[in-house]
Length: 426
Ligand code: UD1
Image (cartoon, rainbow, N blue to C red; front, side, top):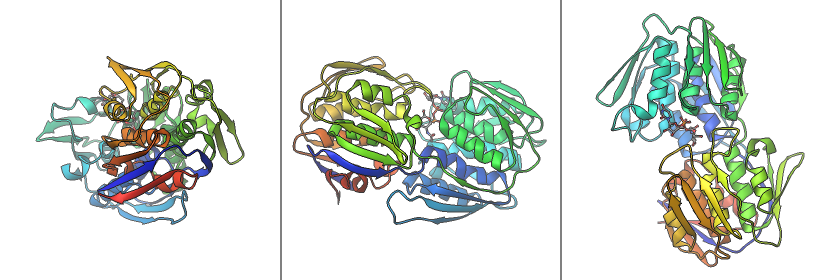
């Protein structure tokens, strides 16, 4: 297990290449199950979660070839070809490692009319966290049974198009149903659908494969089922969470950094917050540039919402910035319960944060002090790295395997801009 040492107080200057989006690449990999032809993805990030998904695809009978690049920020190329009849069993030991594995159930049902998929980890109390996926598949005519920790889904006569209104917005359930509906018979309408850029990316890849989809990027997606899909080559969208994370890193440490290979609109909800907090953000012809010189960041409230609102996946990083800001801010989390695990760790570095229900009240401190801290999940761990950049003295972040699930070569990317940090073995 690795840990990262950071000696804080260095401003960041330079450029950081942004990788392909993990959360776009995961469902795009799964689309290979929808066609017997070859699917090639480019700009694939080199992350542990991507390796988990590639492993699951192999277990389902897909050949996967993944050529990685040594050049920082240059994505890999993944070429996949599913079996003529894919395996339809996704076992517990793969699915428990990553919730996104559950995305295979929709495409498997569509292609082979049956799937047995383990409930994702942490689902001991039943199917609630995937209830929307299952209700949607039932609306498309699948029969669903839960036994022994597995979901057994069957559609012996094929899936049939239907109208499904999501009772709440879900990124994963929208993706699952989109992938199921493209091969269903007739028209499917997904209402109150998620509008995240990763869903648009998935839909555009499916369209390139021959699917008929309209309304991507709106909350009403209309899909007219087709008999079969073909292979394509498709480039994964830039990672907006990585973009936002390095934008916040620059705001917290000070300096000027150009994030290349990305687009300002992908962090549209973050930009006004960063500006109000005292940073400059400008679009360049290669990406987006962030700078903060001189004065301390100001406090600005934020509330997480589904896209196009402020993303929950940037909440922990933003809280690290607010912990160093001048004044008090309120950060409200509306997407996930219990997503304040970073708060006690930030407190170990001197942050003054209290939690009231779904809101964190952050009283900014002029200086955080470096401390040994523990990464608890992906986004929480990167917030500790960001806090470490601003803190006085040394911060040691333990259990960085969480970080490797979602951030490619972070110490090199920040190190190239002057951050004093290194990875060591525990
Ligand atoms: C995706 C992202 C994750 C991000 C999240 C919200 C991927 C691989 N992961 O996760 O990084 O934080 O969107 O932007 O893309 N829910 C239910 N029942 C369901 C499904 C969801 O109650 O069947 C609840 C969840 O518990 C959560 C909320 O709905 O409270 C939103 O979850 P969802 O949008 O589905 O998140 P994921 O797709 O898992």
